[in-house]
Length: 265
Image (cartoon, rainbow, N blue to C red; front, top):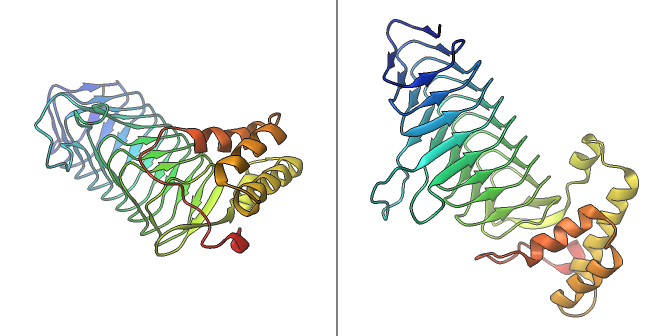
C-alpha cells in the first residue's frame, strides 16, 4: 500500500504499491506513479502525467501543469517521465500542445537540478542533465547524455544532439550537432565534447575520427553542403561521424550552430 502523508491530497490517481508521497503534496486524478516513485513534500503533480519507476521528486516541483503557450486551447495532452530520474526542488515540466505532439516526453536516468524547466512538447533523451535554472523552450529535443549548464536557455524548436555539453549561462538559438561543445552569450560551437566522450568510454581512435571530421566540416574548403557530402563518403564506416552527418541533413526549422570563425574550429 502506498505510504501517503496524512496532509497530502491524492485524488483518483494510479499509484504503485510502494510509492511514497510527502507532506502537503497534491497528486491529480489522472496521474500515474510507477513502482518506487518517491514524491517529496509540497509537490504538485497534475494533468495526464506518468512518472516512471524509481524516480525521485523533491519539494516544490510542479509537473504536468498546462503549457505556457498562448495558443493552447486545452485538450488531453500529456507529460511522460521515464525511470530513475532525479527531479530536484522547484523543477517544472509542462504537458504538450496540439501544435506539437500533445506529449512532453522525458527519458530515463535524468538529473534535473533546482529550478530547471522542460517546456511543452519537448523530447528529452536518456541520461540528460539540466543544471540549476537551465531552461528548455517549447518543442526542443535533447539527445542522450547531454549536459545543459546552469542558467542556460535553449530556444524553442532547437535540436540538441547526443553527448553535447552546453556551458553555463549560454543562450542556444540554433541546432547543435551531436558531440558538440557550445558556449557563449549567444552559443557558438567551440569544439567537441571530447572530455565527456572519454569519460563515457569512447575510444581514442573514435574521438580522433570525430575531430578530423569536425575539422573537415567547419574548416574545410568549398561550400558547407559539399563538405558534408565529402565527410559522409570519407567516414561512412564511422557510426558517430555519420550521426553528425544525419543530424545536419535532418529536418529542422533552425539554422546550425557553428563556430564564431573558422579558425576557432
